[in-house]
Length: 287
Image (cartoon, rainbow, N blue to C red; front, side, top):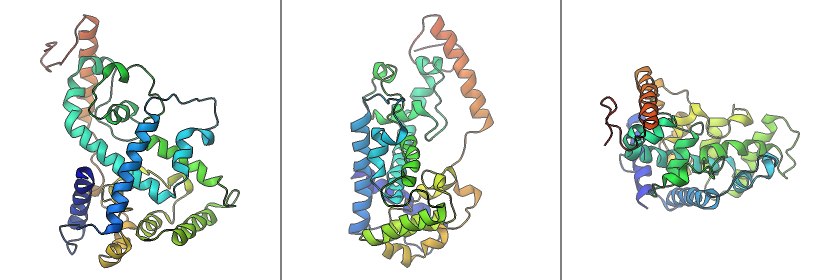
């Protein structure tokens, strides 16, 4: 519940900064609390099911377990999972970046501690281990391809083109209408469906989930609010708009990237000389 309340409060604060007419406290409705809690539960379930499993790369992608796990959900519910996964990753980064940046073994292996998202497998795997801090498990290799939740969600996109709804072979505009109409018929509250459609109605299937350009929307929990709130604060206009550049997540600077690359060189030298532990950043000194 702590993560649910924190994510709701932080994302609503961002919306308050965007549109000053919204209240500063979210006061979640029953539907919204259900959306937030279900998304965090599904994220935990994904990590529980797949943390110790190999991905058989000989098997067609559509038959892999993680695709089947997510393809049962409409895209807005998977975007909900992606939103809370990125929130969890941001919290993890706040608590662990200094450790990873200064650990000699991580540095020797060039573990990227600056970039977020599905392309940074090492950080995704380290995050999913929560507070277990078991390096031997992290470096054992059993996690490859499995515990990257944003990456797994991205794999699901092809499943939406080949489900059992009669949508296979249709053009993308028809497919979007089919998925949206099904959601409107099945969802008790249409807020998440409407919010997702507003942000994706002009997008191809390949952009339906975890689109980098929509990071600002996921940071605002756009698919987790109920329809009453969305209508009351006219949020659809914001969700379908082209955002100001400052609304996107900040990217690592050139200086930060150069410093990270330089630290890899130092840590490699320390490791080759038998050193391990916490690199102080001062020459080759290790604690």
